[in-house]
Picture 1 (cartoon, rainbow, N blue to C red):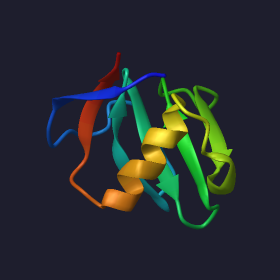
Picture 2: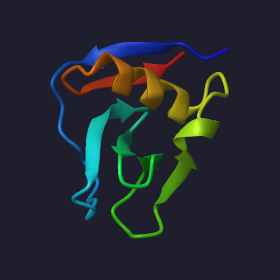
Picture 3: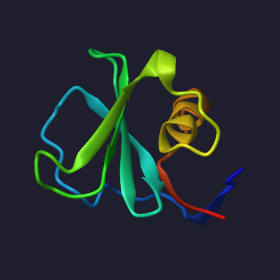
Length: 87
């Protein structure tokens, strides 16, 4: 199982994301993580192109080692966005 290790505190998104309803949660392995309350879904952006993302409904974001599992934990903690790597 992958474990997320903190590498930098108080980060900003790197990739362009146009949805104003999404909340930036942090970064994992170079991807920006977001939560959209309107859609009740998590998004992982790995580029600025509209198609450079993956998303998952919040109710399905539970698989160990997945980007969305960390995103769920970050949302629950309600903390300043940080950057993590998996090991």
